[in-house]
Length: 486
Image 1 (cartoon, rainbow, N blue to C red):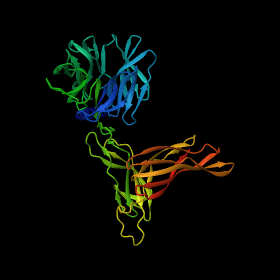
Image 2: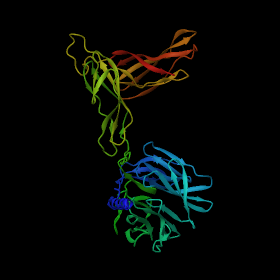
Image 3: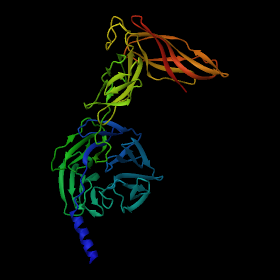
Image 4: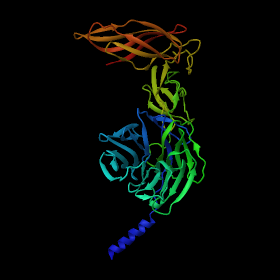
């Protein structure tokens, strides 16, 4: 009696359980021009994910939207959106693995294995273990696993089958079919395929009286359902096109995507790393400068960056100043500090970030008592001496040479050399390299190769760039910039 009650309760719960919610529609993943790319359905955010040397076929995005399975060089391979890396499951010699599809929970990949003339259905775990699920009596022309690996669709010649059942003698079928997103009941499934060159969808294929919808005329190739099941993406004549799942619907091209040979639609779930394809912001330069007086706050220069998709940009701090504080993008030098400080940051469009931008801040000493009140910038009639700065800290190589990338906050001329100390027989010796004279405009970066003498031989301990920088009015400042020693 108790067993009967439990069975009845389980049956009621099963009947009351709602169908799993379908994922939202994310970005498109395609093979275009031989490259694996991502793009938004409206054509924005086109970016290259991977550039292989061979052909990619059979794209399949995982249920969580974070991985893409495909066949490459006869192996099942996976692109990971989080790591941006490609890994491959190596198949045995003489074997070709094609047509990957994900299990409902995303822990397994089903595919077709072609070996010695046999076509087998195989299941692969992400850990690399395999299981053969069955062998085809006749080698299929095309193949596609269903929402679970218990069902599949395939063609023999131009005739379409679902598992082992003929689909109402549907002939004139070309290319690989595609199943709709995962649903609870088999009769809820839909199957998209190319019939007589056009796109057709069969409702409840193989398990109930089948309703067929003629969606759009050809040409059509390799259809894939949107994650929410309301649309289909396919490629035709090198274009990716999207069409609603409705009879005699009009399709629209995905702008800017050309040379397409495969395409799939990413599910956007709660755990998806990113549902939107975005090109990082572009910057005209990665260095900037600003000057201020001691104890005087100053606004950092506006980021020299724009977003290709016109998305708003936000400030992302990489490293704050060593000799001051930063409130938003306003820098305040520490009390009594005068000299050079730096801030590094990126800009983000909410999906991706720019390269690192380095801002050099020149803090000028306060005027002597009686020289008048402090001002935000030096008095034009008495210009401050220029600051010569490094855009990147240089490194001394084994040949005792380095390349210094120098910037100046105003038009300047400078004379610099390498100066260092070397340990010779437990004694420190000073080395000085040849002096070089150059001029530099503000906002420009000059790459200058400097070197120390090769002798005496010994271990170089410290190295500096030393010299003098002079402004247009003749006001000069001593230069001493550090160099990293290997």
